[in-house]
Length: 167
Image (cartoon, rainbow, N blue to C red):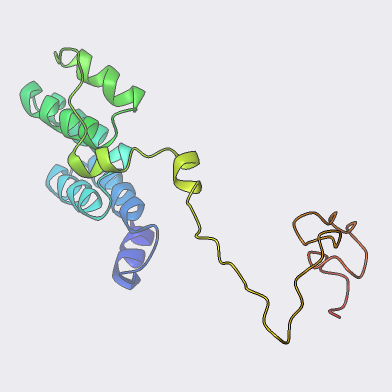
């Protein structure tokens, strides 16, 4: 607990693992029997990153232990809205009495359902360079960068070799 408290006291707002930090400290509070502090840290972790799985499951477990199945189902339902593909949340949802179909993802989640392949295919406008009086039109037989073979790794012409000095 001392290590987590130290990290919480010295963390910066841009710390990449803030949500995980609060989630893990919440687990320690839960194990110590301090359920109020645990719930506070789990909720804080979700306010930082609502797509973190562990806090939803921990909150649901705390509600089940407190004989509040309805509130546990609410926590898992909110988790499924953020993480619709989570098998753990889907299983808990059904165990707690939820019925298929699973809850719909939130609007921000639905807009983020773009596949990585679709996001990578972005159209870059082509720029046409007209030959001016100082520039001749490139000949068709000249190889271009796109058609040139990549140099072998370890040669001085390979820009990706960290052992070769820059030219």
